[in-house]
Image (cartoon, rainbow, N blue to C red; front, side, top):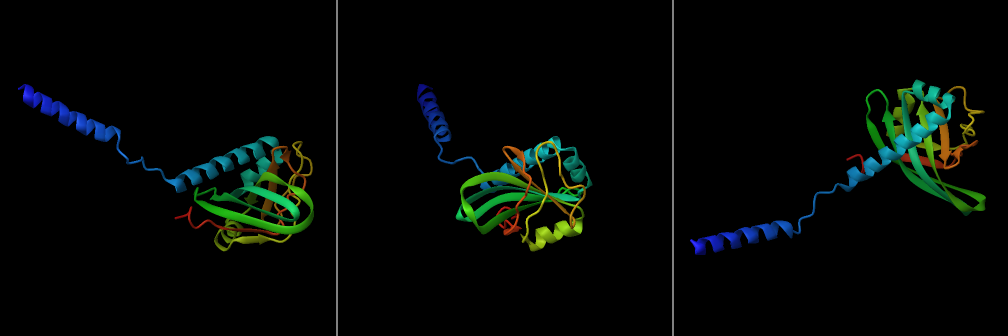
Length: 188
């Protein structure tokens, strides 16, 4: 009996040790983690936007869809930037993960991190943005200080654009020279 008990304990110990020291790592989906981080950033940016301005909240309520991008822009004679974001159809909840990149020429030195919020008046404009990408060729006067002065009263060409920094809304949302396109990896 002792012989079998000792063999049984040795077998249990071997199985337990294998389970504890297994080299198998838990399944971690990097794409899902990236999507979750983008969704969280977008939610925080939208919350900040609509809580800072009644007009922005009214435009958001009227919008059929929105897109939010987290961007970093740097300037050293040339300017460039890039970021990631999500475009959302408000009715269906369908999310499309996207990228953005910008470039230009200008005098300056430095960098800035900010979020861009695009509100789409109708689904046609939104679907063109998502499916064909979009290149902005001009600056958009879209947002102002946290007091909400000079906010757009309506959509301009079906679009309202807001730029959020750590200091609040910015008077000029410079989206010139910016290209938006689908993130193939995150939409698989």
